[in-house]
Image (tube, rainbow, N blue to C red; front, side, top):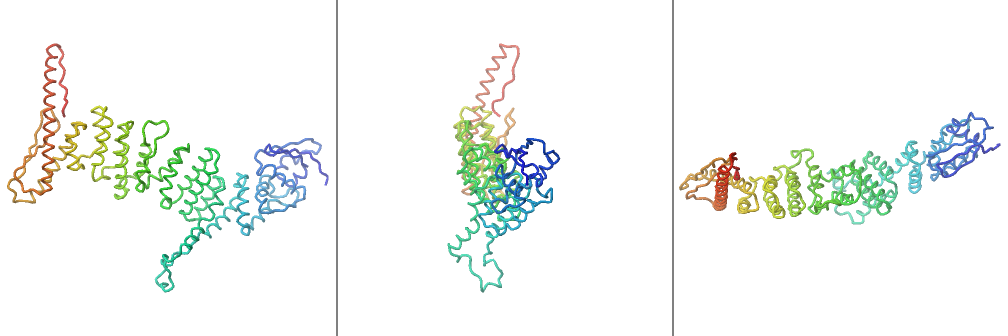
Amino acid sequence: MDVTCDLEVDVNGEEVFMVDKKVICSYSGRINKLFGKSKRGTRYLKVIFHDFPGGAESFELITRFCYNKGKIEINPVNVSTLYCAASYMEMEKSVSGNQNLFELTEKSLEVIRYWTWSELLDALRLCQNLMPVASSSGVIDKYLDSLMGRVASSCETSPCPSTSSADSSGSRLSCDTKSTESLRNSVFRATWWFEDLAAFEPFLIEILVKQMASKNLDHGILSKFLFYYQKSRFLVAKTMDEKCKTMETVIEMLYLLDLSCISFKTLFGMLRITLNLKISKCSRNKLESMIGSQLEQATLDNLLLPSPVGSSYLYDVNLVLRLLKSFISKGACCVPLTRLRKVASLTDLYIAEVAPDPCLKPSKFLSLVRSLPESARDSYDAIYHATVMYLEVHSGLSEEEKMKVCSGMNYEKLSSETCSHLAQNKKFPSKSAGQALITQQVKLKNLLQETNHASPYLDSPCSFVETENPGNEDQQIVLYAGKLDLSTENEKLKEHLQGMQWRVLELEKVCRKMQNQMAKMMRSRVSSHNSARSLPRLCS
C-alpha cells in the first residue's frame, strides 16, 4: 500500500504524529468527516486533539491497527485504551468495509468474567486516565459490574445456624462455639478487597460505592471501606486539595448509607480532621447532620472541639449549637424522651465546661441553655450552677445582661436546696432571686395544701397571705404556718422557705431605703427646677 504522510496529528500536546490520511480515514469516521473529501494534493493537513483518551500512547495503538489492516492483539491490558479510543475516533463501523475495532474490543470485554482479579484492577486503573470517555462509552460500567459481583460473592455469609427453623435443631451448631480463627476468616472474606480498591481516585470510588449501594451490598461493610479509604488516601496525599477531595467524597458516600450502619465514633474523628480542612459547606453540613441526628451517643470529650483559628473563645460553641439543632431538626416531639434526656444531660455538662470562658458572650450562653425544649430536663439545677460560674467570671455584666443570662432557667424545676442557695447568692440579680422565691413558695403552698387535705387531724391549718406592694406588678406570697404534724420532708421544705423569706425581707428593706433616698433627691430637684421628673422604679 502506498503510504504518504500527509496528515499531522497533535495528540494532547504530548506528541505529533505524521500519518497517511487515506489509511486513517478508511477506519475512523471522525477523521473521514474532517478530511475524507479533501484532495491528496493538499499538503500538510493538520488536526489537534486536546482530549484524546489515553494520550499519545493510545493514538499509537490506533495507528498500528490501521496500518496492520485491522489486525492487533487485544488483551486486558490494552482493551480499555482501544475501546475508548475506538469510541472517540468513531470506529464503530468501518468506513470502507474494513475490520471494526469497536466490535473487536466489545467481544474481548464479553469475557471479563474470566479475567483474573489483578487484570481487572489494572484495567480499572487505566480507566482513570481515560475519563470521561471511559464513563460515557460504558466500559467502566462493565468493569465495575464484574468487580462488584466478585466482592458481593465474597461478602456473602451464611446465616447463623441458631436463627434457622426449629425443625433443624438436631443439626444446629451454636454461633458462640465458633473459633476465633473462623471469625477472622469471616472478617477477611468481607474486607479483603479494601486495600486493592483504596488505590483508586475519589471519582472512581464515588461511582463504585454508588453502584454497590444500589446493589444492596452491606452498608456496614461499605462504611468501613470508606473510613479505610479516607485514612489510606491521607497517607499518600501530597496536597491539601487532595485531602479535601477525598474527605468530600467519603462524606458524600456515607450520607447515602443507612446511618445505623455507620460508626458514630469514626464520624466524630472525621469531624476533628475537617477542622483543619477547607471542605465544601455542603459536605460539612452533611457530616454535621449525620452526627447531630444521633447525638445521644456522644461524650463530653467529643463536643469539646477547639474554636476555629482566629476566634477568641475557647471551644467551638457554634458547632455544638448546629449539632443540637440537627438533633431536633424534625421537632422535639419526634425524638424519643430517653434520647432527649441523654442529650440534655450531655448539654448541661458542656455548658458547665464552657461557662468559665471569659470570651463566651451572654447570647451564646443563653443559646446553649435554650437549645433544647424545657421538657428535656427534669431539673435545672445543673443550669443554675453553670450560670453561677458564668456570672462569677463575667462580673462586669450589667443588671440587664445578667437578667438575660438567667432568663433561660426554669425556676419551677429548681430543687429546694438550689433555691435556698440562689436566695443567698448576691451575684444573682435581685429580680431573678425574687422570681425563684415566688415560684418555690407557690410550689410549697400547693404541696402543703395537698398535705392538709390528706391529713384532716392536723392541729391547725396553714394559711397564706398574698400581699401587694404599691406600684409593684409582682405579688409576694408569705407563708404563716401553725403547729403542723408535717413529715420530715415538709419540715425541710419549711426550713428552706424560712431562709428564703428572710432574703425577701432583706431585699424589700434595701428597695425601700433606695426609694426613700431617691424621693428626697427628686424633691430637692423639683424645688430647684421648674420641670419635674417621674420617680424611677428600681425594685420590681
